[in-house]
Length: 339
Ligand SMILES: Nc1ncnc2c1ncn2[C@@H]1O[C@H](COP(=O)(O)OP(=O)(O)OP(=O)(O)O)[C@@H](O)[C@H]1O
Ligand SMILES: [Mg+2]
Image 1 (cartoon, rainbow, N blue to C red):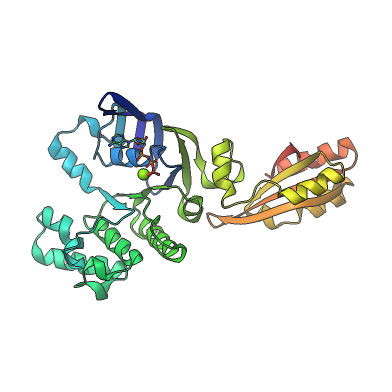
Image 2: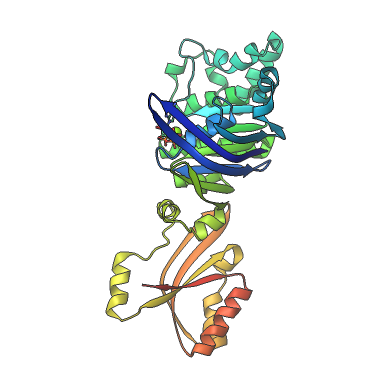
């Protein structure tokens, strides 16, 4: 649905040039809720502005729904942009207009007949749960309600894609969750592809199916949310994952390991049904090993359970090897880690 090929973006500021994007390749499929995460200045907002063609790439190709943005007339671009809705961190509502007028704005600009506008705005405000605020002004609404207006406005022209730039960063955790639930509904009920930008891993965990991690104008890691959360490769990704899923061993547990002279542990990563099956009991019975659990963490991602176990396996080397083969055949990822 969205494809970026070797995208570079350089800003010229007087004599200085800032390379905001340095060769981005990215593919967002129809129906994805694709999250891009990165620290401040990584280039996330630049990336979404390019998809919306608010800015143009210095180099590279952007393909939206099969059409290359760089090769379109301005009329064709206007049509493509109707397929792309966008919501912002600070909502960007017109303070002097009512909620009705804010949501109606894209329809008025597109010269939709008045009675159709009325029907569509009523429907949208009902969808986002704000039917009773039709005649209110933005300053009479809470942050969460303002973002719902922003969402209704972004959906006005029935887009295929919704871009969200830090759409929940100005909201408290509870309101964030309600907005994320609304985005999930939009994705499921209307089949709208969502590309969202955030610096919060909990947002990714909550609704995305794929994630790309950005640093310094580049994508440093990309994959399904389950894979990236289960086995983050890049140190920056590991830092992000640590904020929601504890995958390293807590310090005082480590200190106890040092005391007992344990230097290596086996890290097991189990997903879905495996996470709740008695695999460890099986290892003990089948392979004549002593297996002690040192640390575990279970989390729900993508409505699937992800379990991380650090275990100390003692026994004969050949039994241990057979046990690890068995785990492998069960689809459990394992890794020997020094502690
Ligand atoms: N219009 C601009 N002119 C010059 N430099 C810019 C412009 N927009 C962004 N930059 C620079 O490009 C780099 C990436 O900025 P960008 O806003 O994309 O980061 P970000 O990941 O969205 O950060 P944040 O999380 O703080 O929003 C930064 O170094 C920024 O200063
Ligand atoms: Mg930004």
